[in-house]
Structures are given as structure tokens and as C-alpha cells.
Length: 203
Image (cartoon, rainbow, N blue to C red; front, side):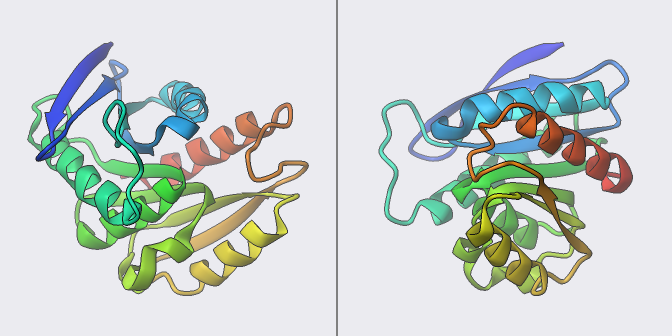
């Protein structure tokens, strides 16, 4: 079942979709921006097959330009969304995980650091943890960083960040994938890795 949601985040109204399988064992919130929306939608469908609910929000409102302090803005808005999720009867008792790509991944790290008791697991794909600043040592949730096998810069950045996290962390490479995961089958491989990680850690 998919329910459209509208959340006021102070000065902007965000629109999203909450999909909950009847036997959902957790819910994964996507820090989605328009440039990665299609990929997030595809991964969400795979996670639903793993019996996870998904909450897909565009963290920038329609027509809104990306500000210079984008990560701070996305983090504040993601925390608003998480607060709303914990207050809803349908999701209040479900463990919460976060997933994001690129700049959105920096926002999920900052949010996980701010809400360690609520965020149980984190998955970043082609993430920019280096944009998360000094919050990484406060992230205690088990974290998976998925990087393209043909993205050496991404590998370096994520491997360095994994060493700074307080909780368990792994960097997994998807063979043949570049930063955008446009190669056939690579996004599906990333989605399966995410599903396995959340199945193990989202409790």
C-alpha cells in the first residue's frame, strides 16, 4: 500500500510516498534529490521485496535551487521527515534505516549522528561522506558504503570515511559500475546489497 505524504519542514512543503508491505519488518527513508530520483525509486522497489517499507521524499521542493549549504539544509529536512515518521501509527514501531546517494548520503550520515537511537542502519551509494564534516565519528549505526568498481575516487573517499565511523562499517564494490551506476545490472546489484544489509542490521 502506497500513501502520498505532505510534510511542512518550515518554509517549504515536501511531497513523498510511503509504501508499506503488509508484513513490513522495517522502513527505509531515502534522502532523495531530483537528480537521483529514478535510481532511488528502483532501489526502493527491491527493498519492498525484502519486506521493507520505503519512504521516498524529494528533499528539495519543486523549483527550489540547491543552496550552497545543501547538506545542512537536507539534514534539517530529513530530521523533520524522521520525526514525522516516528509519530505515525503505521510506522512508529518499525525500525528505521536511511539510504542516500551523492550529497544525500552526507545528509543521512549527519542525521544518523543526530538521532543515533532512532536510526538503526545506513546505506550510502556513491556517497560523499567527506561532505558530512565532523559528524562521522558520531555515527554508530551499522553502515554499508556501496561504490562502483570503476570509481577509484569514490573508493578512496568512502574507505577513508569508513575508518572514522563509530559503528561497524563496510565498503562494497560493484564490479563494472561507475559513479552513476548506469551500466546494465549494476544498480540492481547495489539494491540487492542494500537489501541484504538492512535485513541483517535493521532490527
